[in-house]
Length: 273
Image 1 (cartoon, rainbow, N blue to C red):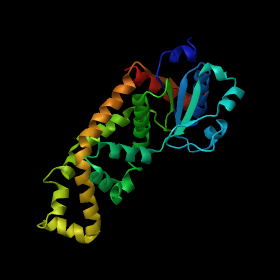
Image 2 (image 1 turned 90 degrees about the vertical axis):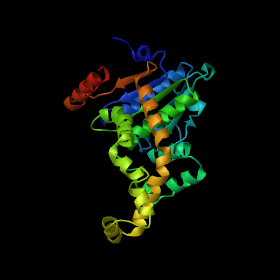
Image 3 (image 1 turned 180 degrees about the horizontal axis):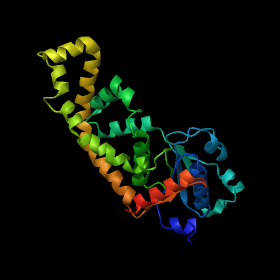
Image 4 (image 1 turned 30 degrees about the horizontal axis):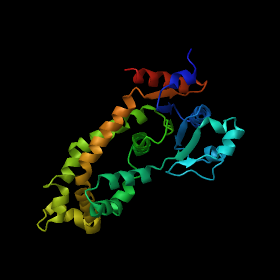
C-alpha cells in the first residue's frame, strides 16, 4: 500500500474530503506540515471557523488571506529551518471570495459597486446553496493560478454528502445557463419591465404587495449582474477542469464508524467514474 507521501508526490493540489467529524482539518494540517518539512512552500486552506487550527499553528487568527506560520514554531515541530520549507494557512470566507469574483468580472467600477452595494446581493451572496463549496474551490483555483506555492492542501467544507463539493462548479454553471436566470437578465425580462414606466397589471399588483424598493433592488441587481455572466461561466468551467487535472489528488478521510466508511466508499466510486 502506498504511503501518503507517495500518493501526493509531484502533486500541486491535495484535497482532503469526507464526511464531517472524521479529522479532515487535522489531516490537512499534518500533510501541510510534513511537506513543509520536505522543503516545500505549502498553504493549507480550511473552512473550519473553530480556532483549533490557528492555535496549533501559533497564529492569532486566520483570515481570507494566507498567513505565514512562524519558522520558530516549525522548528519546534521538527522542520529544519535550512530546508527552505514554508507553511502558510488561511480560513476561507465564502462572502469575501464571492465579492472578489464580482470585482474581477464586473465591466467597470460602477457595475461592481452596484452589485456589491445591492441589498439583494448582500443577502444571497453568503447563503446560496453550495456557495461555500464552490467558493472554496474558487479560492483554490485563484491561489494555484498565482503560482505562489508548491503545494496547496484544502480541508473541504463539512458536508453530509461529500459530493456537494465536486458538484458545486457544475451547479453554478447550470444556474447561470438555466432558463430561470435568463428570464431575469434578458433585455425584455423582469429587470427591464420593472425599469419601464408602462408595466403590466400583474407587476403593478406585485409592486403594491412587496413594495417598489424591493423590486427596484431586484431590477438593479439582475441588470448589473448580467454583464458578469460570461466571466462567471468561464471561471466555473476552469474550476471544474482543475478538479480533474492530474496535478490534483483527493484523499478520502473517514473514521471507523459505518456511515463515514460507507460514504467514503461511495465517494471513491464517484471519483473514478
